[in-house]
Length: 334
Image (cartoon, rainbow, N blue to C red; front, side, top):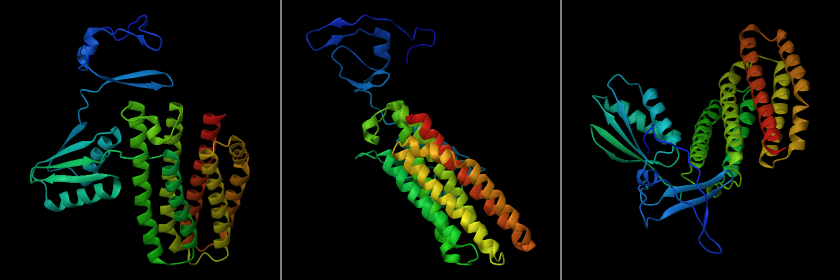
């Protein structure tokens, strides 16, 4: 790259090179810094805000190096791996100090669960080489978002069914699906970062306008957080076996929130601002229904009341994410 002291902005005049082409000169120092010489092929991409020029001769594999100290926890290392993944790195070299083999095994298992398209290529006592598979086909963000929401919707529905029901197998299934939601969210986040950086084209994620990238990231995060709350409800629900008639009040609120969230996501995918506005108009109505549900918990036995209020709080958070999605739809497509 050019030195920090050099100019990074230039004004040049376009020159006619024929009936269908224009030529624009660029500073020689800039060209040299990205490996472009006379006769070098370059990659051009027409963007909404200009034209991207990138050297085709220096397509180096984006690699990160992660140092794992003996005191590092699995969560700390996993966080560094996820950061590298989100940046769009294609390869990671994980270097280990004296690390317990069981810690490494736990780390690799967590990476496999959390990240899509990641493979352990080489492993030795001192280091491991992790590779992220390249995109071979289009991965439409809309379809990925719909898939993530379908999983969250199923989680929430099953979590509501668990209220007053001690089905341990169903609760475990909800927990497993939360990992799939996280994996899809991180993939969406990675693709958006790569599209922003220009390392993949917009058409590879089936978008036409770069301005859609940020709304998709915001909505993906709201859906992922909704999944977290569905998971929490699944953990608390079995403790509401003694909640009596109040179970009906919680479930009624829950299914209204589920319907609201489903409408909000569909409005975003369909760019339907009219539906988004109708959803936002329900904000006060849902707030009142939530307060009524909390009031009805006064008759719930003390050993269940705390869990009941936690469930209602999580339902309120999921509803808030639905309203956020509706607002994003209005902001992005009005």
